[in-house]
Length: 325
Image (cartoon, rainbow, N blue to C red):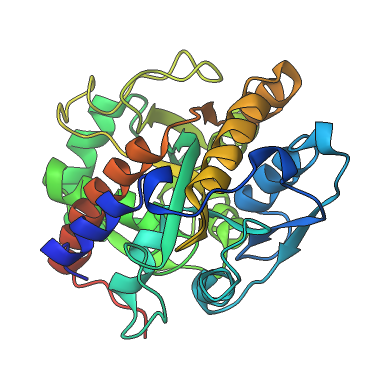
């Protein structure tokens, strides 16, 4: 999926412009139930986030909010459903940067993230944590870096599947750190974590809550975080970039997307409501517990992030030859 002139022009056009659209009374919206579509099964990070948001959004309107899990096809089924929904603001997508990644991995994802949606707001950002099985002799990340370079392709890392965040983060690391770790895909984050605990694989870029819990009981050894700065949940862990790979930063995000052609005032109303929810102290505390950093961006900022990730992950996927079979 190339980031061409047409896509850039469309994204620029996705920015709210009330002058180009009919007038809508923001105070009248919503007048009925809204639906947040999560393109994965219940229990994942997108689902957790959507349910937290849904518990607070539009509270003053006294209108219900339904979270609808439409899993399948790597998230594409739910994404297509929102792309085809009426552009009236009553159906919104809660997704991660997988919305950008999926079209690079399959021949026909059935949607174009750059032209089929009206981006609303980035909600959160989260890093991963490099964890190793206790049998790995490295006790610090610089020691691990030296060890990984020496082991080459005899070192194995796991992920939740081909094209999953852990897979891409690890391949980006291979490219930037000069390592040759081999990928072992699993059917979900749970089985991959179980494999590193058992020593079937040696390395995993795991989520913060799992690394925190398993590190505490000695099942794995956390070594570093992938974010630009240290994370409050694991303040003792250095970042990768301060520990031997200066340019390495890798985080993932969740955001909300409405169907294209949704009237600008409705996009703006959703943006205002989401910002209000993300400022709620209870919601912030719950998200921080899950390893998220609360963001709450503008539409323009989300568009910029989408452009950046289209270029970045497209190159990583092409260079590593990653493709879903």
